[in-house]
Length: 106
Image (cartoon, rainbow, N blue to C red):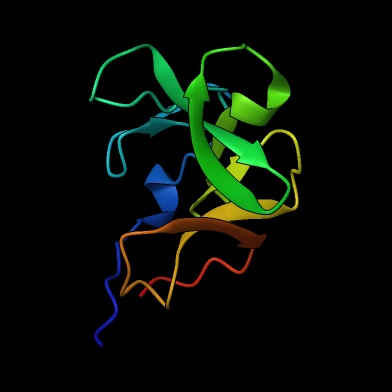
């Protein structure tokens, strides 16, 4: 697997993204809470139930809120901020799970 790099010239470095900054390269706002809504309709959203990710009706509770963390480049849960969404089986599955944040890309 090859790595990708971005050149940042010293005189153009704007520093680390701050809360609310839009990150064009990944399409997220840094640390801005969001919901993940099902495109299947029915007003259904991803929810965290223990270590499981399930689809439920919208409640607005913290277990349905997520943020993009630019320092780890992961989507973290607001209910358990030390855990991130992860594609099961090292990225070779269609299932989502929540694990300790490691920032590893498959």
